[in-house]
Image (cartoon, rainbow, N blue to C red; front, side):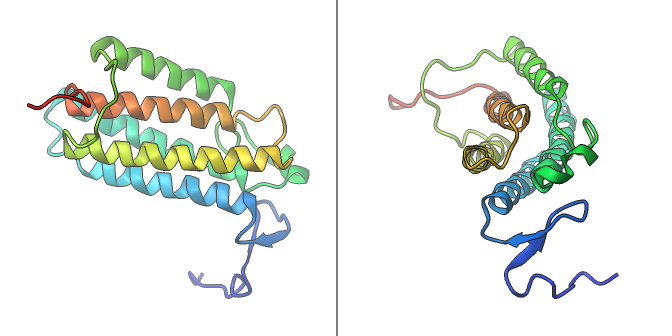
Length: 190
């Protein structure tokens, strides 16, 4: 199989499960494309960790890999047209409420170990924390694209993609603070 097919040369792409071809500028394509960017940004964050001898680094490394895989589930759901939705499989190609709840549990666990700041945070206390913050910003952009898709009628009301992405961005904020080992307030000279 070749990596190039020439099918997209006219600016279209095919949806999953034999779906129709749509413009590469379509809201749906923009939504799952932004999600793909988040996967790559998380890969950079994961690669930023050192030898993984630190317990929190090892924990975050494993968690990031899991989140990358889950974002493929998000992407699959977004890349499926409404008429093919019945073909999606929970937690493989369809985001579930359990996936959202699992993110909430991760947030709670990390917050219990790492109290969160009560002020604005400037990213950059650590390379890993900054890389996770970049991924968080990309997730927020993907979330905005997904909201636009949903508002245009491109996602059913029972889809868990929007809650998942919202929780994921929250989790990434908490993970970045854990990677930083604390935080510095926005104001004051040190």
